[in-house]
Amino acid sequence: MNGYVVTRPVPQSGLGSNLASLAGALHTAGRLGRELIVDWRGLVFLEDKEVNYFTRYLEPLRDVDGVRIHYSPEVEIDPAEAQEFEAGALQEPLPRYVVLSKWHGPDRVGAAGSQVERRLFERLRLLPPVAEKLDAFYQERLAGRPVVGINIATGNIPPPTGRFYYGRFDTRLLANRSRFRRRVSLAVRLARRRLTATPRIFYATDSAWMSELLGSLPDAHTRRRVFPPDRAGRLYSDYRALGYSDVEASEDMVIDHFLLGRCDALIYNATMFCNYGRVVTNDYGGNARNIESLSANYWRATARRVVRSKWGYVRSK
Image (cartoon, rainbow, N blue to C red; front, side, top):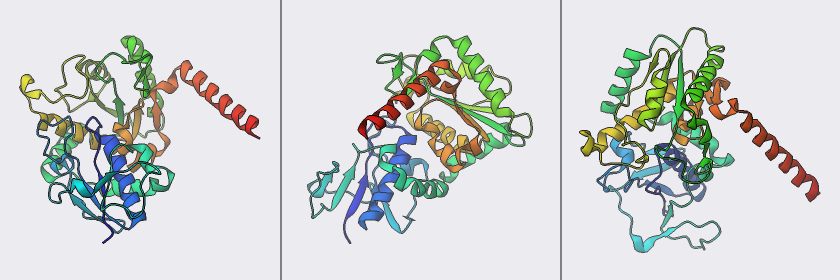
């Protein structure tokens, strides 16, 4: 055996990024002829840092694309034989454990691994008790009609730097809440044009105030009810102070993540939380819309990027 590739997320990373990272690690393990170890311990969302987030909520996969998969702590990693991957820095012979954590999220997948990502995601299954809760909610609230999914991230804090939340989404759109609601309503009407019947809405978000805003839309449904305190951020686990638990709160997020994959259309901002749904539905058959695309600023910025790209190409020739 040639050794292992270890996928170990950074503690602050969410489920969407971690699943993309897992796909990239699977692709890398296949290329190296190695087995894969999924070590999702230490995430900030759970107080018990020895719990493997993956196996707490999802059924373990034992083989994908011919790569055998193990999970910590059933397989422990000897730190003396492990080395963090740094692009271009690893020397032959490779260590027994090549650890992927800094090289993270969608950057790890790339174009070459996108089909591996699809095959992995199509095989993912929730543990039966978790899947039963998802199915019960879906049958009670959403079944029988098309569903428009809405996934809006806020970070649950003011923008940390400038107008973008860590470079992901434009926070200016969230400043005027009544205007933002009108923009979401417009996006729902646009999504509805491609559906065969009047849809229901399922929404997932990371803050109580956005949940209240989206819940005011007609025939809108959500499952998650307990959020971190206002402005506490999304990296939160002290749910006991709220009469809840970190395990239940994480389960809510996992179920929301997979419910988005059952929707027929999607409205979103730049968050990896909806990546699973976009992959398994083939981007909702083209009926997926970034809420920022309904802003004139979005198209002005896009035009500037195109001009800069073309100008740089012309100058390089």
